[in-house]
Amino acid sequence: MAVLIVAGLDTGGGAGLKADIETVSALGEHPLPVLTSVTYQNPSEVRGYHTLPPEVVREQIRAVRGSFKIGAVKIGMLGSREIAEAVKQETEGLTRVLDPVMESSTGAKLVDSVESVKVLILGSIVTPNVPEAEALSGLKIRSIEEMKEAAKVIAEELGAEAVVIKGGHLSYTDVLYWKGKLYEFPGERVEGFTHGTGCVFSSALAVFLAKGFELPETVERAKRFVEGSIRFSKAEARAVNPLWELERDAHRWRAKGELEEAVKELMELGEKLNPHVPEVGTNFALATPFSEVFAVKGRIVRYGGTIKPVGPVEFNASDHLRRALLKMREFYPEVRAVLNLRYSEELVEKAKKLGLVVSFYDRREEPEDVKRAEKGTMEWGIESAVKRVGKRPDLIYHLGDWGKEPMVLIFGRSAMEVVERVRALSSR
Ligand SMILES: Nc1ncnc2c1ncn2[C@@H]1O[C@H](COP(=O)(O)OP(=O)(O)O)[C@@H](O)[C@H]1O
Ligand SMILES: Cc1ncc(COP(=O)(O)OP(=O)(O)O)c(N)n1
Image (cartoon, rainbow, N blue to C red; front, side):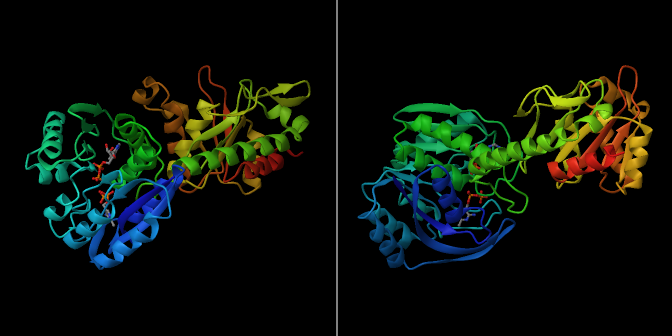
């Protein structure tokens, strides 16, 4: 099934047509991109825009309308009244999702007037954010109740088929008004980059409608998709990541394979490693670029004179090492792997001789409030060891405390780098 996308180009690659194409593709449908305008923008500012002649927009739609089975159309930045009129005529009869783009989140205008957007409201599924809903309804919106009133006004007075008011500017709860009924879609703030959320939301809505879902289910699915695209956004883009699901799954698959290979290699060191395995066992953890962590279920234990993994490599199989690794990655995101061994002075001395950067934390220095808080020790320990040495540590040790075995953590930028370090440390 194809989804027609009528939108503007964001040169920063975060919102607009590029985000729409990625959303439609990631959700498994075929995007048909129609350009209305070129903006000059990055995630921090929109410097201006140029609208294409309406005839150019018209011809783009005509070129594809007859040759593809179009399940829905998503309409984003229109730019001008003339383009809005052309798009209205050329998309007649299609299921229309209208994101009434008026301003970017940075406050720059992306359409000549609110009236131009209104041209396309009749019969469309309209997805304003709170400021856009205020402009369309003439009402002030400060609460979910006021979102509901505005949605009703936009549907009943402007003739929208349905109205979804998005809550990204308020409480992250979205509201749908459809066929005389109101629906709420509760949400919570997700940490990450949010430039492009509105574009991804409306494109996802168009895709799920094209797939045949009913509107309330469609809104729920689109909302959860946007949440993922915020959670798995990336620093270099400073915008949402519509490819998150595909990338996350690919990274999970690769990380699992990488760790399985490294564990196999580690088993080759069996006899040499056996004396370094602590009473609680050794574990080996690897993080994906999205900071999801794999480890060995049940840990690696001493077995006769050698060592043995108790279970398979699994997602979230070690809380302890996961917390150590994620804390280290806050300082050094390139660090992806960690393994724990029993502390011994010889091991630490050998690490220093090998030129590894060694640091430590002293549990006796742990502040009382961290001690009282459940699960804060590891994070505090890694942070204090990182700060103590002032550069990326390869090995962090602690000397234990009441009921806590002294331990060594060996870090690396890949699982194999950790194995190589362990090989060097355990060689006689
Ligand atoms: N930080 C966030 N955490 C979770 N959901 C968010 C966040 N920001 C926006 N959303 C959701 O993203 C979608 C788009 O909303 P919004 O950001 O208000 O649109 P726009 O980009 O048009 O301003 C909505 O479903 C909204 O609830
Ligand atoms: C070309 C273009 N189209 C739309 C927008 C606005 O995108 P949106 O998803 O609403 O994201 P924010 O502007 O709220 O970050 C845009 N900026 N450029």
